[in-house]
Amino acid sequence: MKPISAKVPHSLQVGSYLKCVDNTGAKELQIIAVKGYKGVKKRIPGCGVGGFVVCAVKKGDPKIKHEVVHALIVRQHGEFRRPNGMRVRFEDNAAVIVNEKGEPRGTRIKTPIAKEAVERFSMVGKIASAVL
Image (cartoon, rainbow, N blue to C red; front, side):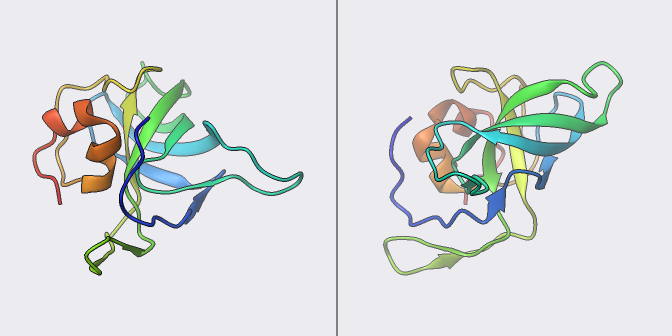
């Protein structure tokens, strides 16, 4: 994983629900773990845009429902600041299902995603319709 330029607060935590924005068949994901998180005892792990998480599929096609998958967070509702001073905030929390290496499992991303997620995982930017 490469570092990202923006200062992204960890506004999503374990237990948060995310919208799945690719064409894998999943509709809703729930975060069950954050990859690479090293924290303090009893502290709930947090993550933000560009974070690599393990999720459970809660809604979607029967084939993929109840499956445990890896995902990349591409949008968050919590505001974050870019180096040029601009503050970015999205309408919802969204993720893309990826494999263990960070390559997307779907072939298309239907909605805009954050530039910070593409900085860290460039393969996701290739299938996105728009990068903001």
